[in-house]
Length: 368
Ligand code: HEM
Image 1 (cartoon, rainbow, N blue to C red):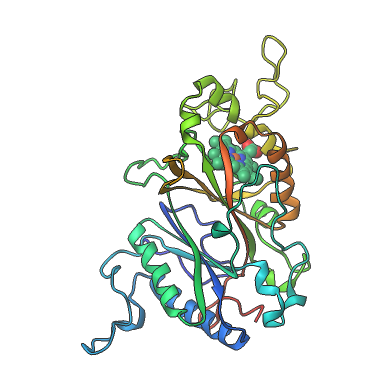
Image 2: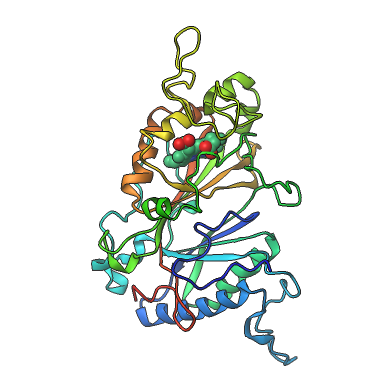
């Protein structure tokens, strides 16, 4: 109970319903040996499969004279639906490992978008690992032990923790609210719809590179919210920004959260009910371009320069093709989204998340 299977056709943590907490880690490789990278992924796969079931790594060696084989802080805790999802960044395909020819053509660092204020300390990485679980200590334990196992071969570049309301706080598990107070995730495609997931999320044989078949491309953006400015704007201004009612989550002019967006609707003065520059309307595009969002809120202390909260959305999306999906969408949002008054993108990374593996195999085996 509480176990999400680690092995399978796809990696867990992509179409898995979002757990309560996120621990994200980006690593840079210190080795230039592909054999060492392979060994690392073999060790990581083994450790991830064990930790996912709630067990300790290495059957807890008991020699008092040696450091324990597991750091121990998750001992006795439930598996908490933990998932561990691995991917590699565009830099993994530079000259170091001789894999340049294996890079999918559209898989590269994102272009600069209007309004970006990226800080290198929140950007990129050779390897990205997304750990999600219903318990933060369980998720942290996984990242910590994966970092420990990689010592000498890979080093942490940046990490980010994220949260949303827990199942205890919301037993009905409705759509979580982001830190602007709006339900976030309503317009997501249905993860139980295999046809939609095949279309939107999973890479196919023949798409670009066959090693990515059954994998997915991840975009991560650390988006800071200008909370203080947002908190001073009127409810009406806030609702116009998203094109949705704050309380119900319904599109403006509609009653229920899951009512479809009506792009044609006009109010009594002939204005579109859903403002042309509202976030939902723009992100909806023509209705045919979709992504799977799996974002978490973050709060990381205060900005020392201004004394204001460093809080916002750690945006994660999965898609089959970053160029056709995320980039096409973000270009529109960056140009005209009313939400831009209240947010600033400060971090950015993309990772090609491998297909899943079976017992005895390892994550990354289709590439190296
Ligand atoms: C919809 C919040 C950034 C793509 C929404 C909604 C909210 C929201 C409240 C309406 C409810 C829903 O459908 O989930 C935010 C916040 C952001 C942010 C607070 C930044 C801090 C982004 C980015 C993208 C994006 C960067 C992609 C480039 C979408 C999409 C929808 C959506 C695709 C659904 C549109 C539809 O109904 O078809 N977002 N979002 N969002 N957002 Fe965002």
